[in-house]
Amino acid sequence: MKSEIYNKKAKLFKALSNPVRLEIIDFLADGEKCVCEIVEKLNYEQPHISKSLIKLKEAGLIQDKKVGLNVYYSLKTHCVSEFIRCIDVVENN
Amino acid sequence: MKSEIYNKKAKLFKALSNPVRLEIIDFLADGEKCVCEIVEKLNYEQPHISKSLIKLKEAGLIQDKKVGLNVYYSLKTHCVSEFIRCIDVVENN
DNA sequence: TGACAATATTCCAAAAGTGGAATATAATGT
DNA sequence: ACATTATATTCCACTTTTGGAATATTGTCA
Image (cartoon, rainbow over all chains, first blue to last red; front, top):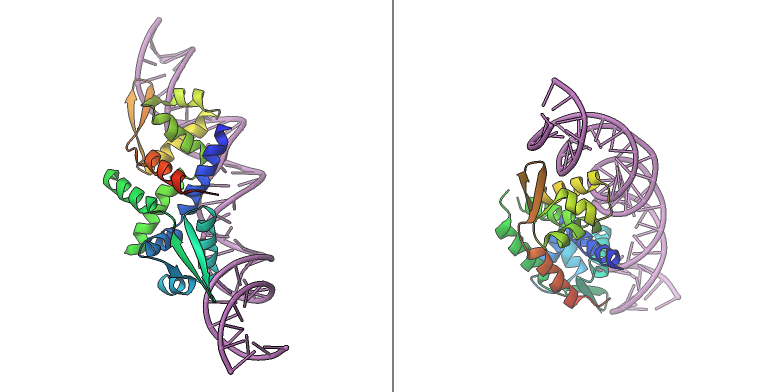
């Protein structure tokens, strides 16, 4: 069913429709980071960062890797930053 | 301020985080359409379509052109469909 | 096993989004 | 001016999202 496709895509965009999650994406563009590094970088509570990361992961945008106590997250694609760059050129408001 | 940038981008993604609005974008990829054509194509009330179009326009994703009684909407960029295509390749869940 | 550090989960109130119904506005023709 | 058609706006109940606080889980080391 076609509407299911749109629902799925909408979820992906929803995952990106939050400034904290976008900032995480931006930070991860620099390379793999553990949760504690992200918490330190952004000014948010650890549980909130954790929830944000899980949302991004569920959307298929990032992946995680467990190393001892730490969990490292990294981008699965650079489409997002490319998309933002493309949009930037077009925007004029 | 940097957080303002993320807020602005988040609004853009928020505009795309809805199946109806994505379907509109998809339909407009085919070329300029007036509101009545979009209402006819999608199965939603005219006021809802109208609100969706305004949201997409405010996000800078589409533009409008008034011709008599009709208002024609068209894409300002094809970044969105390109982004979706890119994401499709990566997704594996 | 027990203490500790890193990350995840649950709970919750406030804020924002959703989409239908009714209504308003704007442009056209008679 | 009036009727008509296309589009926009307002109102509202409902659902979802947001982000902090408290708590749970998981892995490590002594």
